[in-house]
Image (cartoon, rainbow, N blue to C red; front, side, top):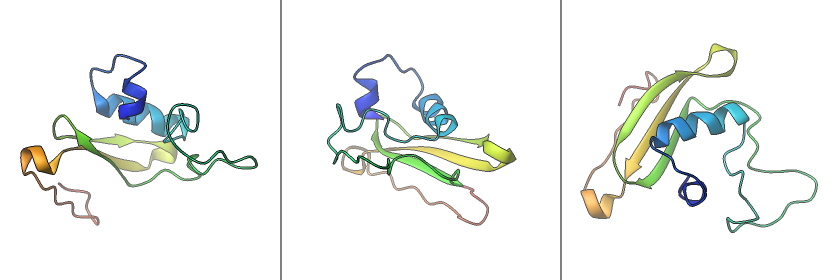
Length: 99
């Protein structure tokens, strides 16, 4: 997310996360601008299934929302701030997706 934000203006990180889920790709800038091994035959960052929980750390602030993703699956998006800077910990009930 932070790498993508270097190339575009993003007002809401959750909207960007939702877009990445719709595209089924969590690292579209790899390996060009994001350090990763270049895979030739497959891309390990392509999602085969939509996750129930999608979180990104070291963000400016805590934000969350529930979205209806592929095949009407519910997914909880969470932007987690830096613990070092905010002393904030996030607890998630993985059965109910409540935060």
